Length: 192
Image 1: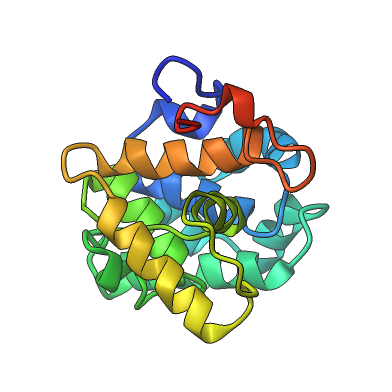
Image 2 (image 1 turned 180 degrees about the vertical axis):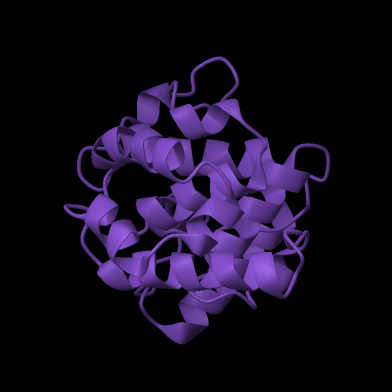
């Protein structure tokens, strides 16, 4: 991952605010689309306080084209909580992140592991695909039992030394090699 990862703007920081913004933008949205929105958003709202104090209409206007506007509304609301109720201090654990509006288990694990090095699993569509192929899981991945099993596997595998890099590597593996159709198995580092 460290040698072959894509050069993405949110990978150049450990700032929990910037990582949080990227993770919210990336929900249900292609990386290629987020790349152009992310720097503009951070330029307009460089801190959680600036986002919290911004008019909702300004936030929505900047979000235009990303879709799923509830993400922007929840991000804005959560910025207010961090600013006003948490005195500008970001949560540090995945569980604490999940207490904010719009932050589910995956997003919480991603932020905590990348920003703070917390050992927390992630399970997005890419990671699900990697795990089901690696462990030859044939059950439908929309079944609650299968999802529970995949979360367990993701948790068991997370590196305690570099959980953020490990989680990003799993996501990158699914996005670039372990493709839904025509996976590039011969190039996969875990092919053996």
